[in-house]
Amino acid sequence: MIPRYSRPEMAAIWSPETKYRIWFEIEAHACDALSELGVIPKEAARAIREKGGAATFDVARIDAIEAETRHDVIAFLTHLAEIVGPEARFVHQGMTSSDVLDTCFNVQLARASDILIADVDALLAALKKRAFEHKDTVTIGRSHGIHAEPTTFGVKLAFAHAEFARCRQRLVAAREEIATCAISGAVGTFANIDPRVEAHVARALGLRPEPVSTQVVPRDRHAMFFATLAVVASSLERLATEIRHLQRTEVMEAEEFFAPGQKGSSAMPHKRNPVLTENLTGLARMVRAYCLPAMENVALWHERDISHSSVERMIGPDATVTLDFALARLTGLIDRLVVYPANMRANLDRYRGLVHSQRVLLALTQAGVSREDAYRLVQRNAMKVWQDGKDFLTELLADREVMAALGEAQLREKFDLAYHTKHVDTIFRRVFDTA
Picture (spheres, rainbow, N blue to C red):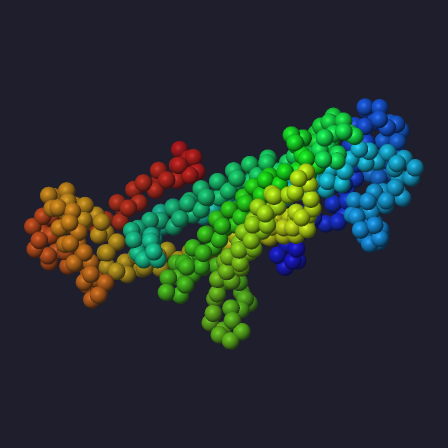
């Protein structure tokens, strides 16, 4: 985790203090269940919970023990025994390290999911607000980066809202996928621990028992989780890239807020660069990069190995922290996005009516002209606009073949912008479920 791209709430999930607190809760809940089953004394389970629950785990002490034992869970259990005393002999009864590690990791991922879902909710609110603000702000739609037909800036933002609503659904599904618990002992057979212990721990932590854990939770779950984060990051980059294009000097239809005192370049004082959206593009690349090693973690040897462990110690914190930061940054960017409707209209009109070419094409075909001939007639006039800066309507009105099929009033009617925005309300009802 890099502090520059970390927010405190998400970073705290991955702190050593939080990890060891979750480890203790897993062990304490297991002891509670074991005491109810008569495997260990209830007094011992109570002492473990009271003494461990009141303790502040010494990270430096655990690190020192691990330096000798070369085993992180044993180091923690040794430190816990120093705190609890003789009753600590009942801790970790029938359990294996993966029971603690995997269950803890899933608790952390579930908590991280809750933050990410809340992040998306905030982004959706910002997108909805700005979409309705610009529902009728006409702008040019582009395909291949080239002027196509008119749309509205609100429709662009509604598109993003619909996309991130799907992202939210995916995050909810990913949280459900990852929220499992494994307390099944060596090779996952429950030989030395009752399955009821796992069920108790799962309930206490808000998880579900893993149906078959084979000592480790199956990593296809984690692959799906990180793949979901990668998809969310890709949607984030798509919107960031759109804003970057709209901020180009030649376009200037929307712009990141440029604060008083902000500087765009060390050399050129005039610069106002899209630094936030460029930053988001880079962060999205990193989140996607964490997806591949998660996929490769699925193929563990037999009932377990630890080839996944080093990977997850990195990608768990980094992917969730980075996406959390990126989503929050994008929300703030949308909230303060500067929109230039006059520039949008000027860009739309830049090629003097070319954006209405399809309407003229369709009108000619409806007037009895073959599609091939209609296309030829419209295109030859459109090319004069591209090449010579002519006015499209003027050229069409001067074209005898066009006018033989269409009257002047009929042709002029095809240049009405309102035609292109007549179904915006329908789109908004679909996206926002409004009446």
